[in-house]
Length: 74
Image 1: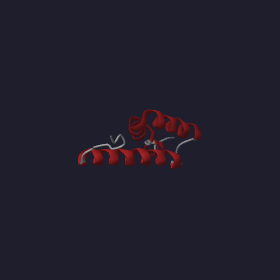
Image 2 (image 1 turned 90 degrees about the horizontal axis):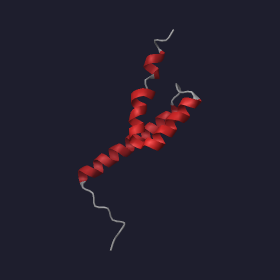
Image 3 (image 1 turned 180 degrees about the vertical axis):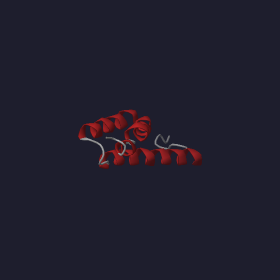
């Protein structure tokens, strides 16, 4: 009766590993992003913590594009 053993295959392990690395890197990127204000940074940290992988994907779609948009501002 081994309740702690989780049987996952090789492909599932790779997908889980890639998703975990992406999630952690997104969290790190939010913390060190110099283009985010304090309020934006706090909002993205909360979004990533609550929505996990969906929040990390949302950050890369909407939160990380300030660098591109910021250069074309007046």
